Image 1: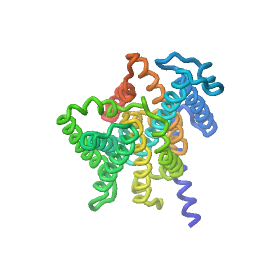
Image 2: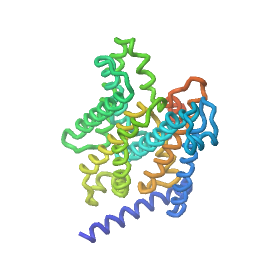
Image 3: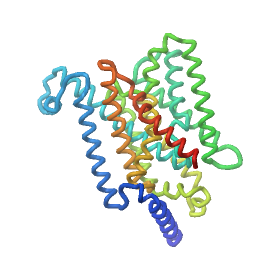
Image 4: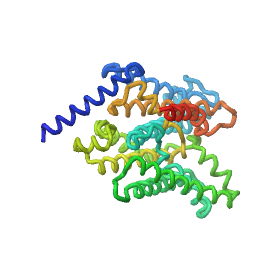
Length: 359
């Protein structure tokens, strides 16, 4: 038994090394020391971006005022905005961006599809439908209620996709997950559009949420789902070495003794926890789960032990910068951050599609 696991470890190590060796001319950091340095630098940049998000916005504040809001809080408008609006907003953007990026890595490995994202499980459309349904039939209007309703809708949609893809002779396969996700997403999207078309009075109120935003979210919303996020982060790191085996393909992974059914179910649960919680907090924010994993691979390669934490850092940075940019586009109003991530991600998505098509 010891010899078996040793052979499993050696084979996986050799495959990861051979795969990354082909990518060295494209990969920026190609050894463990440089990757460690990259993670440290990325963490520092993430903290700087959080500071930028806290300091800059429509209200005139500065670094000194921000520091004084912690050391000498005087209940001024600036201090209240920093403490009650911008700090929760920065924390939420960081957590949501990191979670969506991690789910993107997991989904792309699970489905063997470089264009996969959390939305492939119908999470975004499921959450959107649940929120619209609750608004129209139960007259729900608070963001706190939206969070739990969206989480429920996202979970039900993902479970439906997993249930459909696991039926039949074969177990869960990447193609079945993709097709089932596309079908469930189209179904919920149609239901949502139908409800909005027949209830125009609710249209304006829900459109901002459906676009994805971290504006106006209170810290209590983040704290309510934070345990699920933490569990998802830790679980993703815990299975990172197993993800390297899963990336070899189902046949090789099965030959190496990886329990494929249990592994794919675990990945699905982690995706539901992270993506469902993110949608519950900020609404459906697209493209982070598609774009960020590819940038992370350019930095640290395909080894998930490095890829997952790097993607989390880059995801947080991207959403923070997108949120800061959204404040200045049409100031004093704000653009939903989902629009900004779409503007960033769409050209990259087209590039990946064209590149994939040429292959």
